[in-house]
Amino acid sequence: MSGILSVIEQDKRQQPSATSALGTRGETLAASFLVSSGYRIVVSNFKVPVGRNSKGAQVTGEIDIVALDADVLCFVEVKTRRSDDLVPVIAAVDRRKQRQITRTARVYRRVFGLTDVPHRFDVVTVVWAKHAEPAVELIKGFWNEGDFRKHRWRSETWNEFA
Image (cartoon, rainbow, N blue to C red; front, side, top):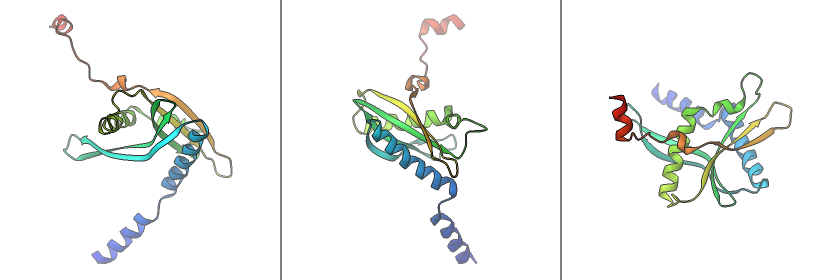
């Protein structure tokens, strides 16, 4: 019986879901859009371990596209949806997602010795309704790494609350 289940599980893993297929198509379209906008693609789907969660499990971060816009290193998140009728596509790039991408970008910059290179976080949204042309939008500098820096208290500030 377990042999049958493992064959069924393998078949499920080999066939991408409609959602992941749409996401892959959206990332391909976004990369083409970025190139036509003057970006140079460095790498896509960069994955790296970024630490451990509260339960001690390894956490892997992923950046959809790393590209250069002139001399600025851009970490690009791509979000693709069939519709934005209920919720704007950009809403999917929430604070949690931004934090995960920021952590991954720090690792990327450290690994490749790019800590002093100017960088920013961009988002490409793709709305790809059935039987319609996709609508692509680029939002440059959607968030900033400073939003996620740990706050350091100066002793004078801390003493004011004591």
